Length: 309
Image (cartoon, rainbow, N blue to C red; front, side):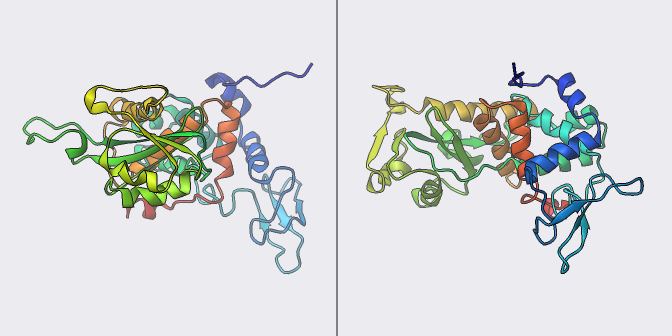
């Protein structure tokens, strides 16, 4: 009988499976190439693995005459210029993706044995690889918005709450029983939301919102639009509610208050992407989530200078 992979690997089990760079590299090759290695320079599949005592681990050579370059799977990926062993990368991905609210850079540096600066940069590169693909949401789609920012400090002037706040707005769309899409916004006007809705939501979806005025024009573009009136104490009527979207927003808020404490507007989108990734992958396995992140390694590179610019 075939042994099924457990849905979630414990930390000791994960470390045992990815205990060496060779183990990590083999898994990375499968995540990026599947069964067909391809040249990282020209894309040709006419390649061969170079073996021998003097060969670097994981080294290939392109057999196209015009190219003929040597490469490993990490070339032209997020791992290309890293000085960290792949074992540390894999462990960091595990810790960020498997915890319910993420981990701070200060905690991560101690967990994998690096400096705070390295842990901070590593965390943001991993979050960049977690950004969701644009798959259309169908069925019942709940829309909501939330605001992320720090609490006022002692001596600060009183600030407005809710939609009058100066915190950073995040716009959320959740397919009930399915996936979530979310992004940061400069404002929450309908004309700002509409391009995201066009990219996220199928034309025949059934939209559900609260009474926020910005949602008024939805009926012009989507046939079905139902609302709950939170202002009058109505939160669910005949299946009309946005409880799922509010549940996602709560996970983002808990990550903010319980782990990161501060999310700047500049980097907020990556923290949002991290929360989206965990939500969308909640029913998958540890290895599914790892493979998804690694599969994005070739398209989500982010140099340090670009991050701090």
